Length: 431
Image 1 (cartoon, rainbow, N blue to C red):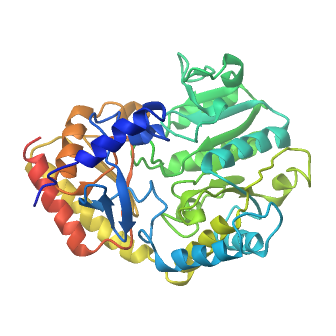
Image 2 (image 1 turned 135 degrees about the horizontal axis):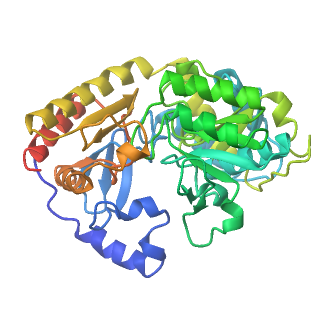
Image 3 (image 1 turned 90 degrees about the horizontal axis):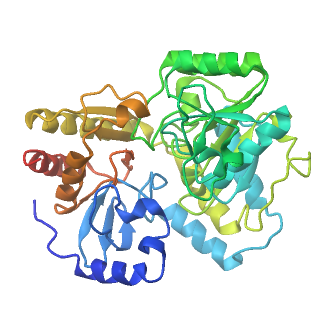
């Protein structure tokens, strides 16, 4: 495959950005800290492709970290956004579009009887945690190592010295007081979950998790783990929260909960639900949601919540996914990519494993199985870095961390998949 010859303009713009923004980026994941080197600066996206400011084109497997399930510049979303802009960019008042998007979400997601629109996935998880605490009158929240729920203070924490100890801050600026009511457990560890509830009976407000993980690479829950989550939280009176910001409407139209047949009490959403614009949502049982202000006393508000441009994009996206489901085709081409990656790694005699759910997957540079952060953390990240840069040079844009899932879009062609596999074969032969 032809190689990308120059990123000179990207380097110039990144140098400029570093004088203007911390680290030269507006989100830490964009800084290529996990792979070294400097990030690529992009000009446009179209379908399955991104073009950088040096006119290099890449087959894109990030899709804005998930939302571009139908490709960049998907015509119905683009047209809906243009039409919404003509009517006004923000009102700070109710619109019909908010009702329409809420109805689409409620009809699609099994757990959602009422929903509140917000501006991001982080805001959705922050609000859901507050609601769970307000609803139960309890303080402790359980999360799982390797699950990312946005930069919420109480969830941006690292594990204590043992499985059932409370957490410690994972970032400067997060106080010990903020994190002292967060308990970190290992994903897929049923025994650890049960012991936590034995240690803190009647004190746990909520358990929050990604039902398909994308932030320690793609990691899949076992049936036993999902069953234990639902049974244990129900018996104790804790709220079970599925963070479907990444996997919602991605692995299935009704999200991972519809795929696995487990219904949480609350669900957080983002990315696809806003059609790629800044929009998030949290929703769940009517009994719980009625505790949100002004129906109840749990405070949540936002000037731009339910923004008319974002809701227009979300309506167009969810309508397209409902009326012309892409999931069967996505499964087919994603399986084709998975098979090709596995064959290439095997041919190169590289220790590896692959996890995939629908159009989310990760090639791990470790023999696996990868079932939790404890196993994911053992991956050969140096090898991954070489793999990442080798693909960049061949016009393939993969996630810039071993611990991020890649995303296939419905705009990828079989030729795109085959070209990607050919590039991977070349790169892994040299790793």
